Image (cartoon, rainbow, N blue to C red; front, side):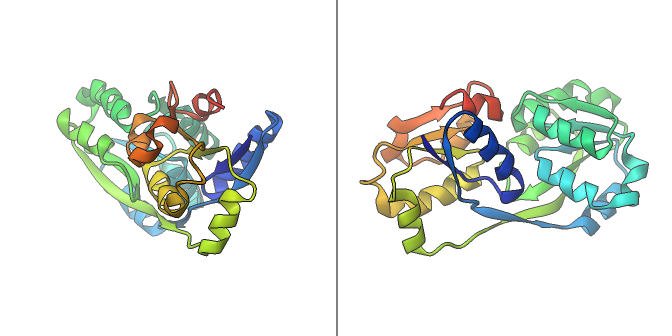
Length: 236
């Protein structure tokens, strides 16, 4: 299968290698690039907080860029949205990591189960844009938290002719979508080519991502049974 990888370049190479090992043809179309704000992360860490929360490995990359400034916080409890993000945090040196089941809503429930042990606000090291479901879940469970935006994902512009040729010459068979924002951006690019892409498979990390797919493609949506890359790959 000719499979479009829409992840940022920092994550796409590993995904492409896995696809090749499974006999697929990965084609890379990063739709966003990360802009890091390490000073915002350092300022947030210096403020009062009881534990850390992250919903993306991109936040770990920002923290890692702090170098020695991060060392005093490596013993703090860190809640990670899923196993992949937890592994990134472990590689960065964090020692007390609690991993959620893969979605922001599930991470909020996990943190709520420990809320009685939080003697200061939770510090959420977030990106922009982001799904509101994690923060909404914390509010629903009366978990006190502060959010620090430590990176932002900015769209990458592509020429219309490039997109047409990329998608149709030869036609792609599937597109991997790991975030709502990337789903939105890809569907905007694909909109002029609906007829030619009638059979493309939209392989989504979660229901939250699949909600963005236009009605015309609903019959082509596949949703991972568990929100991680293994779940996505199981659908190919």
